[in-house]
Length: 158
Image (cartoon, rainbow, N blue to C red; front, side, top):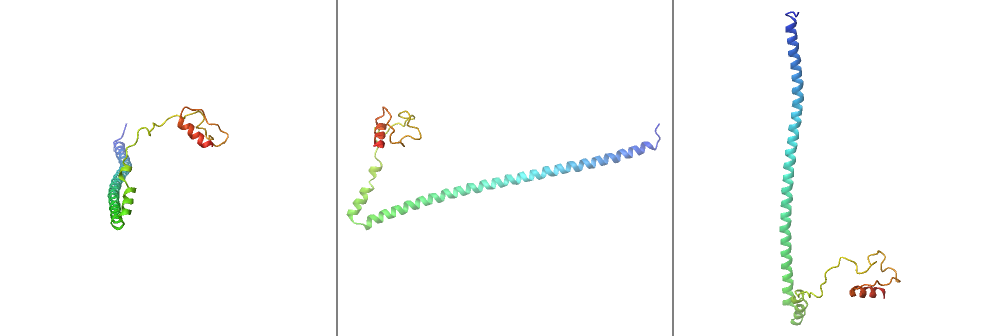
């Protein structure tokens, strides 16, 4: 059937063919491996860059907060200096006027609960939310049970 020469030739041909296939697979796999390594390197560089950027942002806002605090303190110091100088350099009558204008009790007065009203989430009368409400002089005030609204509509139509 087969001669002794064909069998070694077929074996050599199979060996050469196997080497060629192995060489091609190695090149293909190594290029994929190189691409993978390259992508991993780029990913690592991007992560390092992002980490560095975050650190810079944190340092920036920390420094900004410190500078704003310094600015606030400087403003307070300048204000105290000017107020003290104004009291030292002006007459007693002017000092009393300055102190009465900046009376601390006026700014700290308690709010009267009767003056405060809960905000309403509805219109006091139908049609008030129209876009052209109050633009025509012949618009008549709406009937409503809210006295405050009636006084406002009367004053706007007069």
